[in-house]
Amino acid sequence: MPGKTFIYVGAEADGLYRKEESDGQWQKLAKGMPPAPQVRAIAIHPNDTKTVFVGTQRGVYRSKDSGDSFERMNMAEGRHVWTIKFHPNDPSTMFLGTEGSEVFKSTDSGANWDHISTIINQDSVQMAFATRILGIGIEATNPDQMYAALEVGGAAHSSDGGKSWTIRNKEFDGDVDLMDLHGVTVGAADSSAVFISNRTGVWRSRDRGANWDNLKFENFTDIFYSRGVESAPDNPDTLYACIGLNFGSKQGGVMRSTDQGDTWERFDKGIKPLSTTFGVTINEHAPEQVYFCTREGEVFGTRDGGENWSSHALPEIAGSVKAIACASA
Image (cartoon, rainbow, N blue to C red; front, side, top):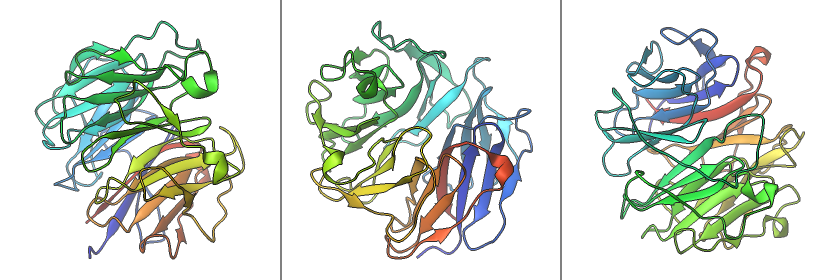
């Protein structure tokens, strides 16, 4: 059982915060970061928990000392990074997605990033912002098979390691609630199930996005707008999904499935989140530890698989939050 657990939370307009789980205070991490950093993605190295990557409005930054200091990695200027993903079998290879639906790849542990593709969906819903990649999923058993969750653009699939993409929206086209994807993850031990989250809950595909099945969150919860879905690192049949009533609601929580999404139950029992959940993270080295953040800065955590919960509210100045990650010291 690990000792200390560090929680990292990204505030959209106020940077990065870190907290040792048993400590009472959050620390704002700013050394080496851009002015007024907008942190929308956090990724912790699976084999070296002191190495932390964050996605900002000025590209990606890396820390090698648990966030005490950061430096900007080498990538094109002007990119707003919304998701960062490690290759499942080789952490020196990484991918990221941007506002504008660009995919970048690094093969040197995040030091240098090359643009490898732009995902284009002519039927994306026109918004005030360019289409964003809010999630990347990779099959562990065949990592050339990748998936992207596009905000108001639906789902995309790549069979060549992210170099080219096919839009997979047979069930979603024309419905903004379905096209508004917020996350994607790969489940099942053989990587045969892919899950996406949208305004109606979580959907599953067993044929790489050719067909999507609605997992019907409304049968398990009265709030089912979902801002993200994650598979457990120790058991890909187990999933966690963020929920809320809508984008800016005063209700939130987390659903859990242990059977690849066939059935779900509320995981956050005994607590009452007061805004929509915007991120959930599972400790890769201690999967019984799960933490989630709500849009208005609440953070809740369990160290025993949901039996007991602790609260870690961010300072009010943090404002709207978009990302959460955790790691054992």
